[in-house]
Amino acid sequence: MVIRSDGPERTLALGEALAALLRPGDVIGLAGPLGSGKTCLVKGLARGMRVPPDEPVVSPTFVLAREHAGVLPLCHIDAYRLAASEELASLGFEERREQGAVVVIEWADRFVGLLPPETIWIELDHGDAPDARRITVRWGDEKRAAALAASIGAVAGRE
Image 1 (cartoon, rainbow, N blue to C red):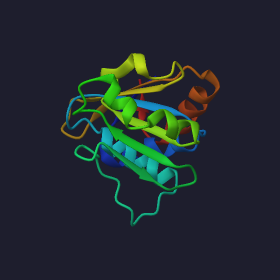
Image 2 (image 1 turned 135 degrees about the horizontal axis):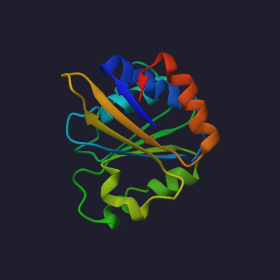
Image 3 (image 1 turned 90 degrees about the vertical axis):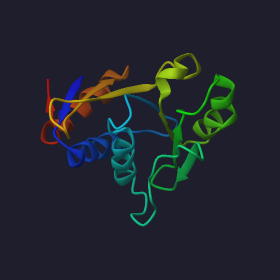
Image 4 (image 1 turned 60 degrees about the vertical axis):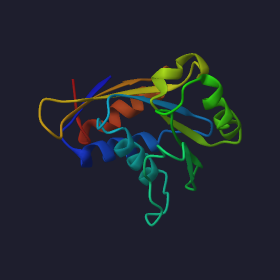
């Protein structure tokens, strides 16, 4: 499914809508160029997962991984600086997943073979206006994908 967002608030709202459908152990792989809204989407996920508003959700570019407590634990990984799949594995994402965390990995397209087949793939790209984004969601779970499609009608325009 392809979604058009006209700005950060809609991208945040999409993250919130997605959060309502997540289950323990889900993995979300994010892809897209710098500045395309990956961290903004994670902020929306955190908001939807009820991460306390006073807990900053920022890109873990230099620390590589951050954990947030919400209705489900949220593990946010930035793989931009990682050179090998062993480095991603050493961050313990699989263990966190097995413990019931939702694991979100920015730059996940660099490590496709390491992620489970049921990974929710979200690609963000710049749109035709400065704040516009084109967001492509690939989710093998058709029932939850349909629920997301139904819930985003008021969130962002779909193609």
